[in-house]
Image (cartoon, rainbow, N blue to C red):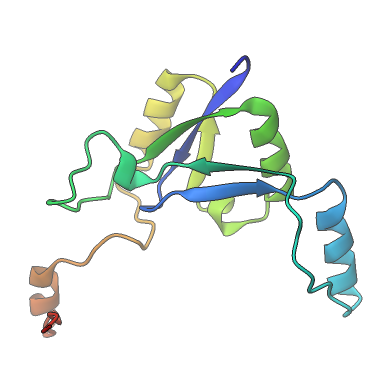
Length: 141
């Protein structure tokens, strides 16, 4: 790929980034504002699946520690710019769950910056539950 960015995803499972046809997002927003929402399925023109934190090189399923880990995916810059323009108001963008950097060095720095910030998808330790007076449920099958 000629002009790429590194997209970092802090969600454990990754994400499929999709681009709607030009003008479709604005058209749907206007219809919703007029209290006549378009509930038909969106026909996406392009999509890219980005790796989640469970695809980070230092993640191991046995430990299941996701905090501080990010999935990385190389994506065409033009795709990222279009996706970001369509989703600039998304909580994924506002809360830095998905972000991009041009260089690996900048990506590493950004990942370190959010290493201790929780996404809400981190697992709960059974020990933490005991301290709060609860017990972890176990499957009995």
